[in-house]
Length: 453
Figure 1: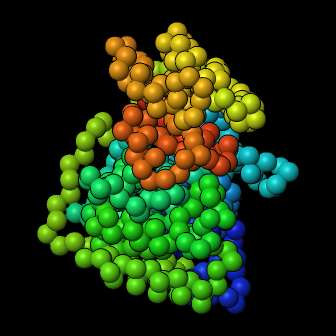
Figure 2: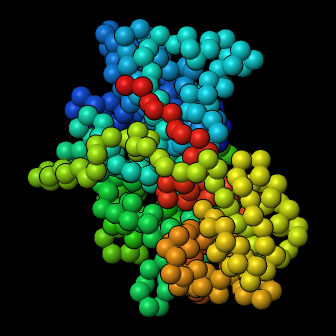
């Protein structure tokens, strides 16, 4: 696979003399595998990429655009991507499914007359929209695996495999645990189950392009903002035994000199480990060829179709049970969830939560740990032991102020599905619930649109 970085900055474009080396444009990466063209994200870097594609190809172009999520810095280049204005060109656009709004509506929103002179419907290329959850599919000769990341919006990471090599694109991701590097004495693994899944997603990759927006010193002031300290990106890559790590999504305030200083720190951190990955800071215009001679491409499991094309069976609305004895917290949660169209049930103690769960069979349960009567762990253990499989397998998100590594481990030992430490942004909880609903096939508030072919 041939890789070229067209935008490496996070949050907002930052051109200028202090960002010449690593670039000021926001997220955009070009990937080519034989005759398959894939563009990862469509930030402001997509403008120059589009100009290059049109200049090099007098004929219409067939390509695939994989959007990690629809925050503005990842789609701002979409209305300026020149191949979309060329008749005869065909582009398939992929992004995480969201409740209530289609991908086409979201992308068209920033091209509304108020903000942009050309509406989405006037683009000359043939554009097909695909809304994804976790799964696997093929784009030409490239196998794509999607995995949810941790951000205050639904975000997917993409693992691309072709020609015996693998590249993982994992931007806008925050570790699920605030102490993810602390190990459990029993098995030496991270304490949060989703951090384990993240490492598995990166496992053995020849190149990992990973969010590295903050330093460890900056991170405490940005908890739940949805980004990773660069040092912990190193830890993930080391644990996954990745071959190369590209530090990506540079903070807009980070100058070239500061990026180089952070890169030095990251290399020193990795050097203390056995067989560390090669680490570099992604730079705008940088070109890489990822090759592993003699490797074989794994066979594709599954249907070979994007996840969004598979029918999703679900009730018209998802039911969320929230149990917390703090009325202020409960008010915030209700204000967050009800406008999203969820049917929200509430309980202020563990006994009531268990009784409601057994009667109403919610799609997801949000439990506080410390409550009157049964605490959150006791409720979870009772659910996991219930003979009704709907309760035994229901996703349970534990929310708590207890942040010690042993507490997190105790939560997962009790059977919780996810562990969220207070304080957190309500949007972070909303994104987690969205992901768990879609993973279990319960997340569509209405039947998903069928992508045109």
